[in-house]
Length: 177
Image 1 (cartoon, rainbow, N blue to C red):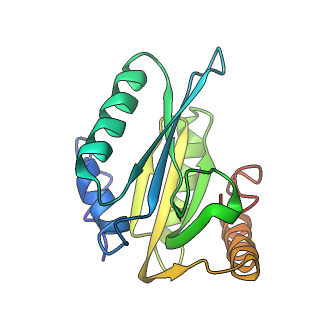
Image 2: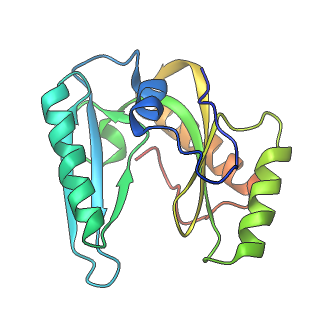
């Protein structure tokens, strides 16, 4: 499944479309992590919700949206968790591969990164402008269960290779966490 998108100004798929594409078939009991970090103070707040708990999920996103309005950056972990832990050993399900490409608010870097993503084979299912760069996602036909440490390490290696091939931020991906 892919998310319809283009680089046309004003074309912003709904957050719910993106989350449905990522997690639509995920087990209800797995957790999504939202982390809000203030860019100057470093203050961080983390919100958790089970994917199947719509009330809790809505509350977490509403709280993150409010903090975003106060200047916080909002981040999420693409891998769902089996427990409320940000550590790699809690990662339970991989629905997508991803890369973070920093552009440092430089239009030329942004254009070069976008060209690199569009010419990559296969092209990403979704590209999200984070403000400081681009996040690209390759949705998997079937989510991969991260059943043991070996699978998590292999997945992290694949992600590092993708980051390397596309010039992604090397500090961003150290594990599936």
